[in-house]
Image 1 (cartoon, rainbow, N blue to C red):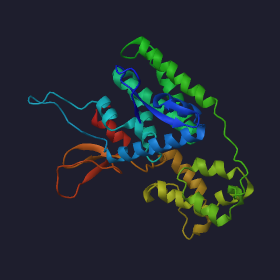
Image 2 (cartoon, rainbow, N blue to C red):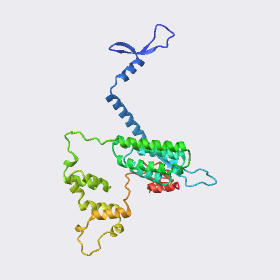
Image 3 (cartoon, one colour):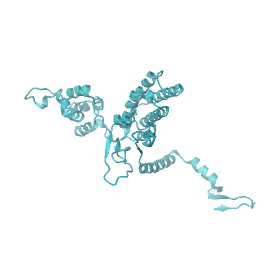
Image 4 (tube, helix red, strand yellow):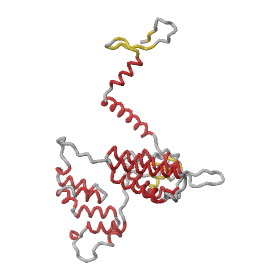
Length: 332
């Protein structure tokens, strides 16, 4: 309630009644925050983050792509602007877009990172830091991040004397990459506590078979199969490797290594061997849960799952952009 002191010149203050008597509202608020435990603070943070996520989902990261310069327009979309307006750093926190951002960073580091502008280089390093923090926070994609950071270190080492821009900035990039690798080296896999729920190796083989079929990377299948005999038996089934072969490779690619003997029983084909040969020859198909796209009406770059505001009243038609195609737009 408002309180006026005896001195009429005082602006007054708000007071609140507590168990200990009357206290100033400002001091009482400070005491309340000091007495808050970690659970209450964590709850408040979760509420704040949820409100931020709700407002973020209403925002659609996009940028209008200007193909080239002319006499009337001397402006061209830059890579740094695309990173900012498409929220590439925020996309690294989304598990659906993490693989796309990782592939994009790998191409930038291996192609011509040393020839990019200082602003683009700083954006790439900040995105790598965001990806590293996200991998440590969620405890996922840690080996992939180690591989990506090792690629960054090799790129920075090779371009030590042939890069464009400030030498001190290049040294800062090297220090940042080494710091991120040190963070990942300190990471240790936490063993799951016994909570009475079934473990992965306790699941029936039918459930394990369904889980293995959802994996698109053969390394995940091989590493999981090395955990126990049951996993090894399920991961060695030829039907699983046959599905991987038809998922990653075309019929023409498979015919290169399929046996040509007539009358050969399909059950006798070693699909694991065929997958290994096709993988060495053609490589593995990239899988992205979400990807960038370009609108066919307004030439706007946007994330496929979020969409973008388009001036066209008809059905919005877009063309998906693989990471290679995205960099080709900027002549990289």
